Length: 614
Image (tube, rainbow, N blue to C red):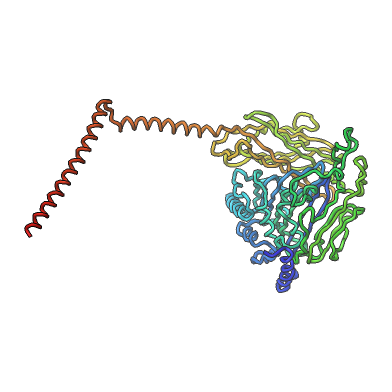
């Protein structure tokens, strides 16, 4: 295979030629962008966004252009109006990192999450198309989406709304289905098909930075695929596919050289020590907290540089943007890169040539000791999220338990209205009458907090429990949402191989509704997943029973076989019979030998007599 630099040059020559030969070259609409944002500590948020538009007329005529053919044929076969697929791993630290990227709309729960609007006349037809869709996506993205069966599928009522533009006639036959696999482990096998859907296949452009070794070493990462129809005012409707990758990288860990992967402490003269500690001395050091002033570059963080630009990308969209204060200096590689500023002084974007490697370097801030305060205009202040959420298990024992969700509104003057959705497995039988919403520790449920409840109970081995709550939290308040549940004993064939590890419970989905303020929009966030411990039998007992039964049968069968086959005689009879038999055999052999000798003698005498007669 040719190196990335050679592939980038080949793409830069062939792709523009193909576009010029195409009759619709002027209709191209594809852009990609990388947004970088330093976070608290030594963390760096990297957001990759790839978006392409294809005319619905061309899509219906199977002329996909920028749309991935493998995905387009599947959506047409199943009748998918809108699709959203998420791969997520890790936990977003909202207290340190602030608000989620993209307002949480590109984020999914831990594992794999999928929801789609399907065109079907009946619910049975929608279920059949959903089964076909999950099985096909499972093979396309090398994931276990085929395990999203009816027990893991729900039909949300209040939590999700279509993001695309759909006609009223189409909305009448659209069915929303949602499924999640919190146990799925996201790995490089899911990243490879993700890159194959891009026009430049990760060989050129910002996608050339993506590497499984760096991405899955991140503290948090999420991959998103969104397919929706967009109908701009006065323009032709297009089908938009948007692919997004967000990751939070640890700069110190990412800068570790590949030739020295084992972490080792830095030399004493390079360590930053907190001199305020009483035990601080020449041979004792308490490390000082790392701030955003650490030095890093694209080559150090991602292990490689950007290999030119993708020839299909929109030339008006800058490929790389970094959000740092204007006082911070940024250096770049030679090659005629151009810098533009967006959103005031906090965001700077860069255009660079279509060929050659490109990298950015952000130098470190001068270290003035642990007690020195970094100026506020030299670091990026995290944005306060609209809502904080955390969820834990309560109770003890193997029979019953409880779930507690703590929701905090940090705003001092505005309330937050949202929809909280939980999908629980059928073996978690919740008691709805125990549902309580306590504000600031006050007991009881309040109608001004929980405005609406949608509850769909589970059926054993048929469907999951679906609980949706429409809630409103007053300013500067904390709500404790609790309920109890009962654990179910499963059949021994329903336990996974690592049954003692527990069962993964899907993350709770919070949809923050837009307020009446101008410019507000819908935001999302996911709680962490939970690990449920169920009553687990001792799976060694069947093995013990099999061994004991086999031993008993072997002993019984062996004794009975000996009794039926063996013949019992006295010791003296057995000796004489054995001796007589031996003597008889010897006598028979001697007799046969004598007869043979006599025959030889007779033949010899006859031969002599005949010779004399002659």
